[in-house]
Length: 475
Image 1 (cartoon, rainbow, N blue to C red):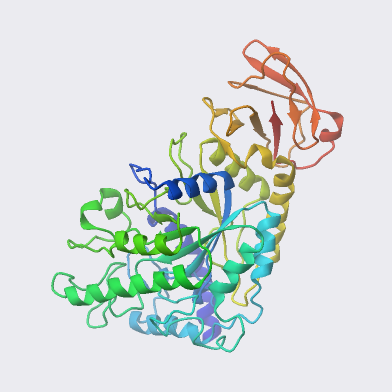
Image 2 (cartoon, rainbow, N blue to C red; image 1 turned 90 degrees about the vertical axis):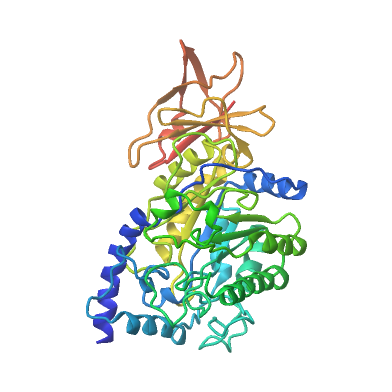
């Protein structure tokens, strides 16, 4: 019976993943407010230089390989085994914590793979919506350090994940879910759980919601004080927000937003967090204002240049967490997305989900390595760059150095096609007498102006390379 359930869950996971893409995405906010604090602005500028990061979703949902948290949420777009009683299903899900034993936990492998891919910042899920904590919180027993992994010397997972990435020079981000479906002060068992929201009327039980707010404050305080230097506090669950900030877009997420103030006092949390971590970036997703220090469109790329900080968070496969038989994006597709995002002023946060044993799929490692091979020789056109007046001409995208002294043209090539002998573009033209360097070889190339476009002749050596994702030129 257990094997049959796992097969059903695997099928449902793929269905649910596709539906989640359509029904459950955090889109970018309609407005942006620059932070006023000098140290936050300095950290934000440093973050904007990194351009490429990894978002790691890992929790009990990795045991059966199902989409993270969402299958215990009762909303119309969520599919489950029709023979399963909802309350029994939730008990089964909560019970996965007794099976989660990542004996091959290897954060050094994760950090090395990310570094080899050319990534420079990371965000790790310390707690997803299901409430299971990947750190040794004192606020609940529903955590990785209370189960079969608790005797492991590295049971306090978040501590060792953060340190492994710090050792590789990454900026460190703590993902934290504002909703907590395991907490009795969010999903109270006195009532049914019809959707993702708090399931009781906060106006009737203010003491209960105040207790949840303190619980949230205490957990984030632990992360800010006990886990080393943190650069980003990445807050998910944008429907938990002040009532006055609820927009039609938020209401369209798949669940009605209750008519009461469902907020956790982010100003108080941010003040505490920044005292412990000076200059900390707070990313309260989709809640426009002083605590959304950059925007986070999910699984999408904005259709134009944005004049404020943002990142597209996009999965390497289809799901955020690990699912079996995943279909991963090709290195070329990821590189093309990265180029487009950076040319529009953003950063790419690529989602990778480790398996339940604590390791990353070999195929994911292969894809990340291929991305890294390209980044090693073309990174100058990505890292530390800013937008240009003209960001694109067809499949060619443009960036420039922060001092505007060097311009870059990144020509995206069709996947699995031969490299052309010449490439051309309009919009950002080299000045007369300027040398144009092909970054992948470090050599100057021949070029001519033909009317309003530049035509570049590629060296014979580059034409022998197979499946080259993109060419980058500096001038």
